[in-house]
Length: 372
Ligand code: SF4
Image (cartoon, rainbow, N blue to C red; front, side):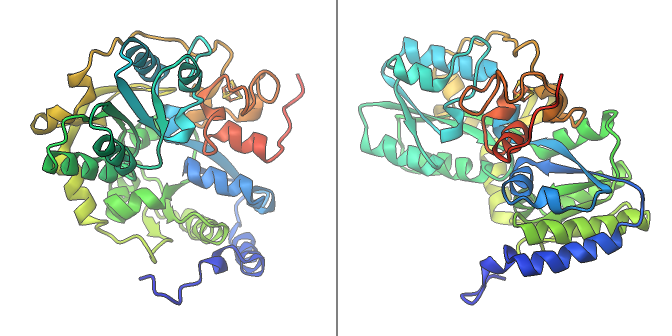
């Protein structure tokens, strides 16, 4: 449990990280460990802090699909742009990194804003709710994305909107679920020895959620926090599981994650959302029961029921390797466009947009493109 004396900086302290790295090095007794960090937040920490270059040489990190911006299909954003440009009375409230996601024709919400669409940058669904309360003459739509980490806050905003009988607030729901992505990765051909599981998702759904997948696919996992020390400790725990051939889950983030997770947050999700039969993930294709939809009891707040969205299939850039990067089958440096035609200021694929995307993490860490 966190107390007022809790010193978060200790998890960044280089002397502590160095000691932990030494223990990790000692634990690495096999020739190779292919470890997937499922979550883009972990990718970001590995690269932003330079930890990636300090890991034992026999650890190979495979980057997973846990970046909500990266897996959001372009057609969702294209449909929103069309809706906003045809309906100037609607204002979309969006997270900052959604603004520059490229669509198939090089368009983006930012460019649409430049053409006059009403788009507001917000930090949370509650910001959007407040904006709706303060602007009763406007129709406010919140563009909701993310895994189980962000879904509770969206659910709370919808519950609050219902309580306030707010007529001008709705949610464009694009929340996805971790289980479907784990199934897809673990059924694919990617060769893995273990997975670093996302600590923030586990805070909500509990460590026990991952037990099911570790058992189902005989895959060791370690639930990890987001600082360099958290990650080195989790890698050490995971390497020990691999060495011992144990296909279980170790909770390496026990100061925050419990076995059962956050019951109140799970209840909020269950109260407001239900499984969507089919949802298309960028890179992974259409996956059954892989996303959330708003239950009929709350349809007054469901933007897709309130407004007319026109969805059409759109294609990613033909040379973009994002689908394979998201499945752990390719490295960003394998993409011919990396660092040349595709950079964070001119992204051609979704993995270059968010700081949690593998391509953006590589680029910001100064990783150089392979020579072709
Ligand atoms: S470098 Fe750009 S184009 Fe290539 S895989 Fe990454 S996001 Fe896609």
